[in-house]
Amino acid sequence: MPSEPIVLTIDMGTQSARALLCDSNGAILAKAQKTYDPPYYSLRPGWAEQKPEFYWSSICECTRKLKAEYAELWGGVIAVSVSTIRDTFVCLDEHMEPLRDIIVWLDTRESTQVGVPGWMMTVLKAAGLAEMVKRQRAISHCNWLAEFEPENWRKTAKYALLSGWLNYKFCGTLADAVASCVGHLPFSNKRGTWLPKGDMTRMVFDVSEDKQYDVVPSGTVLGSVTAKAAEETGVPVGIPVVATGSDKSCEILGLGCMNPDQAALSFSTTATIEITTPVYFEPLPHMPSYNSILPKMYTPEFEIYRGYWLISWFKKEFAALERASALELGVSPESLLNQHLAEVPPGCDGLMLHPYFTPGLTMPQARGSFIGFADYHTRMHMYRAIVEGINFSLMEGLRLIEKKSKTSVQRLYVAGGGSQSVEICQITANQFGLPLFRTHTHEVTGLGSSLVAFVSQGVYRTMEDAVKGMVHYQTEFRPDPAQAALYQKLYNEVFSRIYDKLQPFYSTINRILQER
Image (cartoon, rainbow, N blue to C red; front, side, top):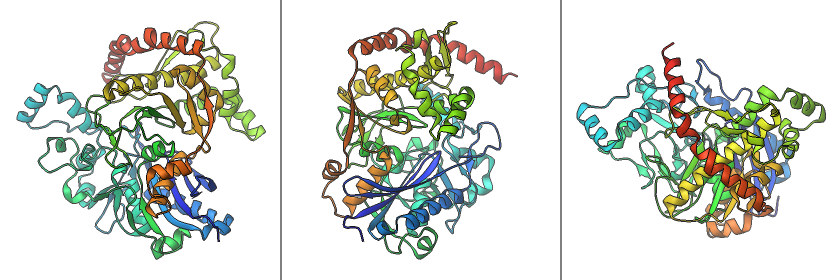
C-alpha cells in the first residue's frame, strides 16, 4: 500500500484518452494512454461523430492497464475524477442509454431553422444581435437534432455533456461540475446556473428543462464507483467520484494560474489563451467568460479553433520525410521538425500565416492564408510560420483580454502537446516579450483535475494550498528583447491588419463556392 494518497484521473481528449495516477505532491506516478484511430468518423464532409461506448471502453482499457502494471499503487487510490473535451454531448434515453452516436465538438453541421418570431427578430436587429443569434442557432447541435432527427430528440430524456455521462458511468449519478458546462447550452456562465425558462437567450439553445441535469460546484462528490463500473474498469467499488471541470478549466488550474496577471496558454488541438479573474466580462462580443473551478471566479478565453491541429495537418501533408525518419528512430515526427525551427529566422523571412482554417463566431467568413511567399521559402519556413501565426493570433487574444479586464499580464504558463517543444516555448516567449513557464509535467489537465479531488478529500485545505503543493515550475524561458521588438512590429503593422484586408476576398470565395 502506497504511503501517499493517490487520485485516479481520466483526461478524455480529442485525440486520445489518458488515465493517470497522481500523488499529492503533483507527481504523475503512472499513465496509460489510448490513442484514437480514428478520433472520429465522418458520414459527410465536416461531420465528426464517435460511438459513445468507444470513449467508455477506452477508459476501461486504460484503467485496467494501470491496475495490471502498477498493482502496488492501485490500493492507494482515494478518489476518481474525470475531465473531458467541451461542447460534446450525448443524447440519453429514459434509462440513461445513448440514443445515437456522439456529435464531437469540431463537427461543423448546421441547422437550417435559424429564424425566430418576427417581433423578436425586430428587437434583435435593433440591438445588432440578429446575425449572431442566427449563427449560434445554426451551429448548435441540439437544434440540428431537433430539425433532422426529431424522433431521437423527442426520446432524449437528458442532453448531457460527455463529462456528465462519464461521471454517470462511474457512479450512477448524472451530474457535472459548473466548470464543465461549456458548449451550446442554455447555461448562464455569469451566474453558473441553467437559464430560466423566460430568458431570451433560450431561443438560441433549445434544450428544455426536462433534458437538463444537475450541475454542482467543483469538488463535489457525486457518488462512488458502482459494482458495474468496478467490474469494467478495475477501480474498487466505493471509491468517491469527484466533479472537477472541463479540460481547459482543469488545465489553467494545473498551471497554477489563479490571478489576472498570469495567462495560461494551451497548445492543443484548439489553441487558447485565458486568465483567471473575479470580474465577469465578454472577451469578444457575445462570447462569455467561462466558470473557473475556483468559486466566484471566471476564465475569459480567446481560442483558435484549429490551433495545434495545424501541426498535424502540416505533418500529414508536407512531412513524409520526417514521418519516415521518426519511425526508424523511434521518435515523434514533431521532434524532428522542431529541431529545424532555429534554421529559419524570426519572422520567417517575410512569410506569415493567418491561422483561421476553420472560422469562428466573430470571423465567420475567415479562411487560412499564407502571405509573403518568395522563391527562397522552404517547408520549414511554412512550419515556423504556423507556430508564429498561432502565437500572433494568441497575442491578439491577450490584448483583447487585457483591455477588457483592465489588467496587464506579466507571466505566461504553457500546456498542451506543443508545450513539450523547447524550441516552440522559446519562440513563444520571444513573440510575447514575456517570461514563459513550463511545469514539471505536460499532463496539466490531469494534474488540475487531481488537485480538485485532493482538496475534496481533505488532503489539502484549499485550492491555493493544493497549487503550492502540487504545481512545480521546471523551466523558464526568457524573451530575447531584440526578437520581441521585431515580433511586435510584425504584429502591429502586418498581422493585426490581415483580416480586415482579406475579409472581402474570403466572403467572395465563400459566396462563389456556395453558388456552385
